[in-house]
Length: 141
Image 1 (tube, rainbow, N blue to C red):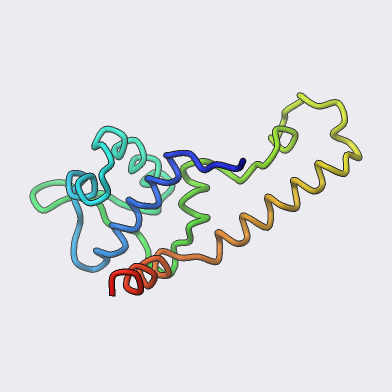
Image 2 (image 1 turned 120 degrees about the vertical axis):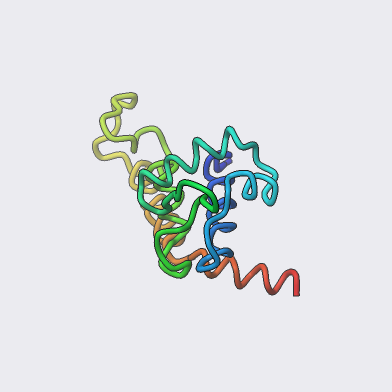
């Protein structure tokens, strides 16, 4: 089973909150935490990684918090997941520098996993935060 870690899940949810607040001002970590039911301590780690990857920026002082660095339609889910988790790697043999398998050269299964990973990354690159906002409108009316 392919499974996304909580890092990726919660990171997308935090970015979603920031995208919904785009051009309305910063959100505090506490506001994001309450809206998405994610602990402040865990969010601090995620937001720090997202800030280092320049997807968000922080503003200090009264009225400060976090804002996204681009328009919601310019930030893909793939960008967020790559910042938090790194590139999609379906099998251990695709990890750069990994020597765990002696069949790497010429292995047809490896080619399959590589192709699948590329398709997943391409798909995630086509979905933006703005797309998620539109979906929420459909769901909530």
